[in-house]
Amino acid sequence: MADKRNVFISHVHKDDHGLQKLKDLLAPKGLEVRDSSIHTGKFNNATDEHYIKTQILAPAINWAGVFICYVSPQTKNSDWVNWEIEYAAKQGKRIVGVWEHGEKECDLPDALKEHADALVGWNGDSIIDAINGKDSWEKPDGGACDPVPLKRHPC
Image (cartoon, rainbow, N blue to C red; front, side, top):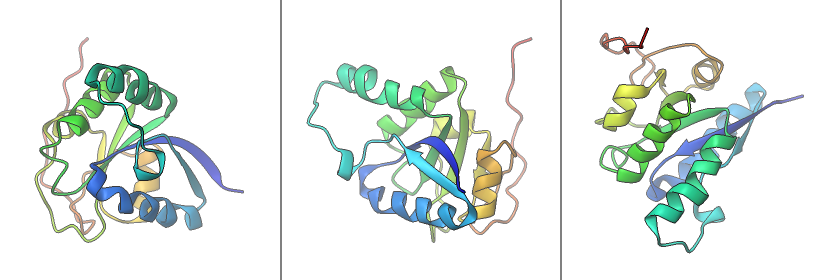
């Protein structure tokens, strides 16, 4: 029986194709991802930014137990991705960055650099470990990243 996890996957719409690949990578390892993110198959016609943030994205992020950022070259400059990460951090969500399949390494969204609990390569076991609480920092090939400064927590 698969472990079912409620997850929000932050991404740019150009990367919609990668969401199913991510779910397909994890399913044979026993993790069924129930994704609340907005993608082509679950698109809406809303145009008001405030409405989108408060009535569509915020509830979807709140529902999720874990927040994943699908990291591709396009995510760095996405105001939406950065907002979603910031919002998830304010809600106390576990934030996991997952490098796009085949990515060689690109710049990360600023909010991900600040708030991520883990950043892992395209490896099902590493992704599941990160979702389950292991704080790892990997390059896209799974090798260790250079050390990063620790997050500061208020006392």
